[in-house]
Image 1 (cartoon, rainbow, N blue to C red):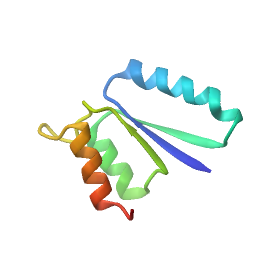
Image 2 (image 1 turned 180 degrees about the vertical axis):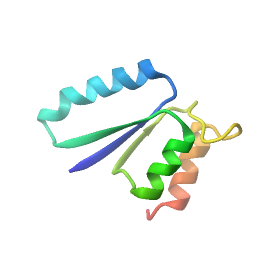
Image 3 (image 1 turned 90 degrees about the vertical axis):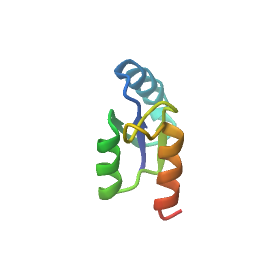
Length: 80
């Protein structure tokens, strides 16, 4: 099963994207994890790495880390 992590501090965006992905469920079996904060994302990554991470450019892991920098951090520290 494929795991998808949606990372966005905006609840409306999370719901919209989640709904769009739910429509694709008939094509492929997957789970969706909704992540609203950077600390939640880091906690998730410590437990297991999702197969796909969709991250908003403005999503911040900390006060000074943008979504782009967060993606670089994930790539650098993952098994990829």
